[in-house]
Length: 216
Image 1 (cartoon, helix red, strand yellow):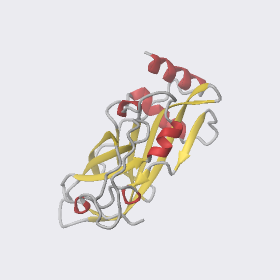
Image 2 (spheres, rainbow, N blue to C red):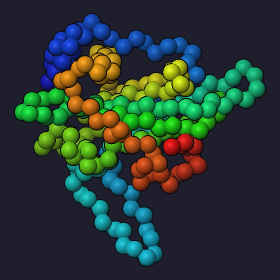
Image 3 (tube, one colour):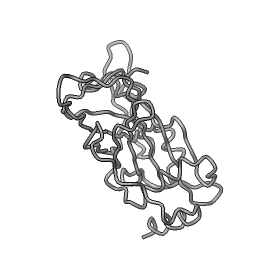
């Protein structure tokens, strides 16, 4: 109930009471875009010449990991590859700022060299690091995956290839992501670059061959 009241107040404040994100466009190149959010401790790797067995036990000092799955459509003829694909991730959660409850939005992107249009399920991974989680997540609260609203959008240049939301995002909450694009909105904390691409996380070398090739 508190969450619904907060969303209504926030949307009303910004004049977005009647603004809803449009239904996903039909026949986009990437389909079945889904997001799974996990709260994870840092993977521990064993090495021969250096101790590496320490792990933080605090629930607030864990990675918030987003696993995105999607299916590129198969072309009617031939084999098609899409080059320079960009995945943009946004995630919102509650925080406290100057004694007031506010929303904080983390954003980041992954650039891929190329993705085959093969009709198979692909997987991408991005994550918010523990230090930013501890800094911005609601003080005194245990970090929970349901506390993060998530949106994933794939682009080629300015063309939308496909998008999806985490399962806990309602139609009204989708409007919050639209609102966040307005640079004039001040009652919102933005952490640009706060969602790391997989190659900047400890998961970079885990199941490496199961991911599309990251460009940078």
